[in-house]
Image (cartoon, rainbow, N blue to C red):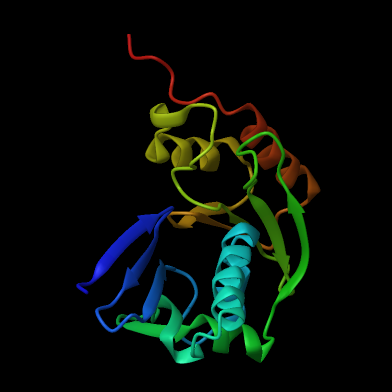
Length: 195
């Protein structure tokens, strides 16, 4: 059997010749040292992605597949260069989390709505399941570059896109800023038509 590879919503699954399976996702940050801040990594996992990862591990355990034959790898950056590979199952087992609160947006991507999480340091993360989204009403016309810059411009809070599917919102943001973001997400109609 030769290696088989499938990519869905930015996550790559590889079945190796020996029958083992590796699920690989990657994360990047300009602000956080993801390789050493495991709570930050966990807060950047969209609930639907976490559900899928947990399901893969549960199905493997139920089928009696040796735990080491199914691995979920998170490839993350060190803040000042380099990549680390974290094992998802081990990361979840540690129980590290930094989430003080969470709210889901409505009307952006049915079945995988973005979430805004407030961390204990009072900053926020806007987390999408995938970018571009798989089920947004614009379909193939969705332009992630336009979306990201329009979202940041629409919000009066200190905010920037920190990864393809994560936006960092400073601790100075308040309820009015979160409302601006939710309204933008609900109403986003894409880039205006070119003249």
